[in-house]
Amino acid sequence: MKLKKNPRANVGRNSSLYFAVGLNVMLLLTYLGLEHKTYETPTTKVDILMLTEQLEEDIPITTINVPPPPPPPKTVVSEAITVVEDVAEVEETFVESSEIGQDDIIEERVASVDDVEVEEVEEYIEVPFAVIEKVPQFPGCEGSNAELKACFQQKMQEHLQKHFRYPDAAAELNIQGRVFVYFLIDKYGNVSKIQTRGPNKLLETEAERIIGLLPKMEPGKQRNKPVGVPYSIPINFKLHQQ
Image (cartoon, rainbow, N blue to C red):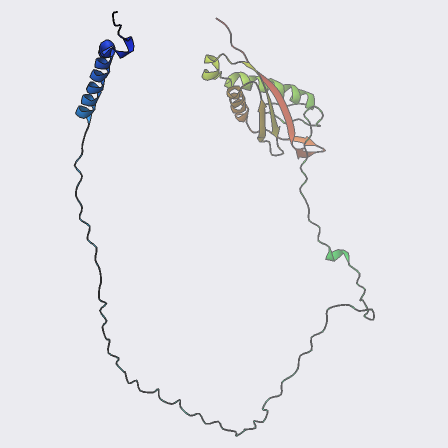
């Protein structure tokens, strides 16, 4: 009879596995040993101070002799009363009330014409150019009111053509249009209150400059009194293509 071995009792059947596990464990321990870092820590010495005895120091008590303050001076009160006679008599003033009571009589006063001051206020009247009795007289114009009106309009056209100048900046930007100008010929014949309204500020400034060069005129009259006359005129700014 042949004896059979139990495969579980074979010791060397897993030797390669045990060898591999042992080898890995040794490699891991070797790696950890090589990578382990240590640092020098300074050594500190700690001393404990124990007070076994408490020192007590005796402080001597010193006494300072301070002299007492001097007594306050004695004041003598005199009970003598001196009678002084009145030298001058004092008049009492009586303040009267300014309020009016029911029993008070109100004085009637009639105001005369001499007591009223009349201040003359200078009246300033503006009459439109179309309805004024005598239009402002442009220098060099004569004749009736209709002739003065026609001459005034003709002189205005001549003045515009003489002093007209197209602004260079407006010409470069190709700005053109119509500017309406309003001004007043006051009762002294001066041109004032110039107002302009147009498509651009450059054109408005040029129109205001042209009207500001108008000469002094003989003022317009209404009922033989000089009055202010408003007038408006359009100025056309147009570029001619070459």
